[in-house]
Length: 400
Image 1: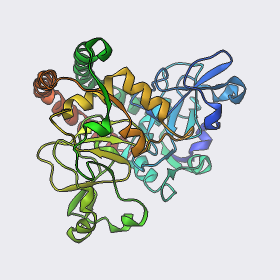
Image 2 (image 1 turned 60 degrees about the vertical axis):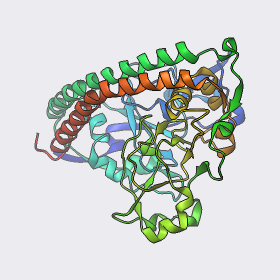
Image 3 (image 1 turned 180 degrees about the vertical axis):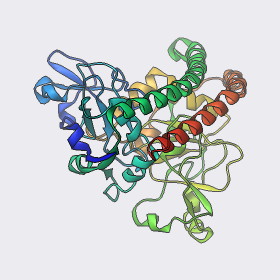
């Protein structure tokens, strides 16, 4: 086992820097695609969410190659900093300055071993301490200087093969969930895809929200809620991690005291609210469960309490995720060339059709039945994730 700096076994490639004015949402001659944060999933999605920049802005070594590991190094959320994906092919695609490319030297480190290490709790705990008060970031120099312990190359490959196999099992479980999502997308678009042909009025999200003060709200800003005010238990604080998978999920535990809650209770999240992320990975959304304990939301998400005589939560959630009109609106209005961001005004202005409530109720019934069917798959997925994380911890503790 030897201790090496990451830069000694890989090349650290800086992302492409460009201004908002230099980027385009559409492909044109003389431009090349640059992926954004949303492309960094379990696998690298190089054909989704790109922005197009002049070819002259991109150097040859900044093009993504097979076995490159692309890491998010700057985000409004500390949970997203350090998230990475490995490329399985060479691509005529690059990545933005919010990312770094880690190009393993295969004579010194197994690309698969390094990828699994960078996703391990051991490394992710280090990324939690990245610098920046509001925008969390890891400098390229910090990343290159990171020290890791490496076993001999043959041992790396043995460990990587075990983790690859375990990862393959959990990916198959995820594929089953993805198939259910594809089915729901198809049903939604079949029912609501072309509102113009149905004669439905087009309104905005603001006008289908409940007609009460604060029915649309982001969380407390600046000194209203400091990180130092979080406590071990109390009133829950919801953030990006609760919606990042487009389903409500408990993520990092954040709590405030009852006393602090009394100061911030106008940010209370209600059952069946729709939450949408507006910083970091923008546009991810979820419906708040009916059994939600008393909670507030952070400034990184917008919380919407709907007028259910006009719009049901399941309909708006799917509309955000699936409808091309909404997707185009969000892509066009997302601000920031380096790190995407939305604001309350943009969310309020999202165009949405006034669909007859009877159709929304019918769709809601389909959503509920599908959720019941996939609940077991989600449970198996969580068990698979726990098993994989256990193997990962043992692997990088020298116990596998």
